Length: 440
Image (cartoon, rainbow, N blue to C red; front, side, top):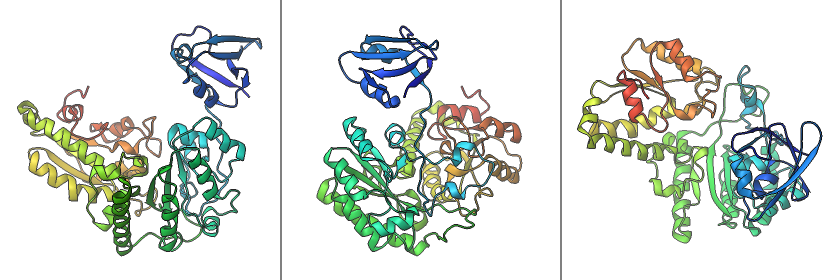
């Protein structure tokens, strides 16, 4: 195999766009990881290229020289997912969204590089050894249950690997793993969840954290196994169970280890744990600790504003219309509004709760808000001064909402300033824009 260089953003030197790297230190290149792994080590590295005219060229370079070239490689061909999980969100997607949203990967390389959750159900022994040899750590694993029969039901297929043996082998090689359990009422909760967490805890500290997250269900579940959401009563019981387990583990090990998604706390109307109780936020991308981290950042911004008389005067007459989902509404009313009303009473905040027509009203997380649903909800509120503030976690790395719309698209449709904070809506650039400044 070979890896093509799409662009050279630094010092070109030996490298040219269109070259294919075919060998590193005399060994054939399997993918980008062979290159990235080698140039992070000391000593010299031998690179063999195939030019666009078919000629080959080799040169021995210092790893720092390769790094300075800032090579952009072709996109990695990911390993597709072969499971048929009964809760898979991709199978519940409406038509007409971005093409990439319908792609399922189960690629250990993307887990290492980007934190994607993978099952390891289809990796070969040679690939497990490659993970170990290259120290691809940490990895993010979708486990859901350790019981083989429950796993067959959840994944919708026979298991090619015993996940318990796979985790044990990786643990012996000191590979750090962060695990998620998507909880399905009546399937992998109760005693099954207890046994799963107990088994994973035996592999601590290699298994460094376990996130328990709720199943996401949309209105597009025709011809799929019937599943339901947790009731409020069940959620409260789950949170009590989780708090007991977390506290016991902390007393024994000095870390909390088990983390419940913020959604469970909001649905149960239970107080979010303090930020320190999320350890080092290893499961942030899984919606674990996101609310508490937002409050911490909001507090820092509020204190900054309070320290400046000029800024305190600036917020008078500033109107922020905060877009959020149904769960976000609970969060704002319990935590955000009481805090800001006591510290920044001159700031005018308005909450626009968006109910998802795209996925169904039961989907209440802000990360799945669509542009069309936002536009519809804003227009219902009528013309108001100020600006619309969108949640940053609703956008991907390209600045696109789930239906492909951008903040600029919404601004043109609504004819009102639309802003997206980097962290919180109290950032200086947000307040300036919403007062009529340039927002630079």
